[in-house]
Image (cartoon, rainbow, N blue to C red; front, side):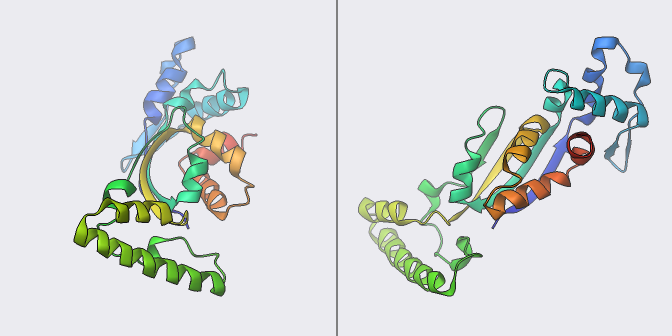
Length: 205
């Protein structure tokens, strides 16, 4: 399971102005806003596509297009996402501080690919986690808190507010688009729908 919420894609206009700095070609800028949405004009889109296709050294402007989004995904997916450290930032909900703050429920975990047998095991695990949580709430004994932390399955869902740029995103896209995990394939499908990502990186190959 993976979920994307509260998306913002920012700074197209400034990125394109910077892309025109080397040749002082700002007079050719023809992008515009309509209903608070950025739209590439033909001149700017042509330049953006040519620079993107020319490779990393020439497409510095895509590092100036920023994405902010809340992603909810299981811990096993976040472990792979965490390999992308350069140019990305993430603030997560705190497992350490808030793991005991609400009852455990099946919806707190990614179980969408579990067999019926595995779900029965998961129900047993959740029931026991909840019993331990209640003991910790009642006693504040740290040993029960450690039980929660060390028993918590990797299918536990965590929400993080993430920021990255289109260069980071393109790297993730091409590295993970055929990955075994459905969450990565859903991530890359989500990326394809972001403003102008397809035009710059996919249809422009």
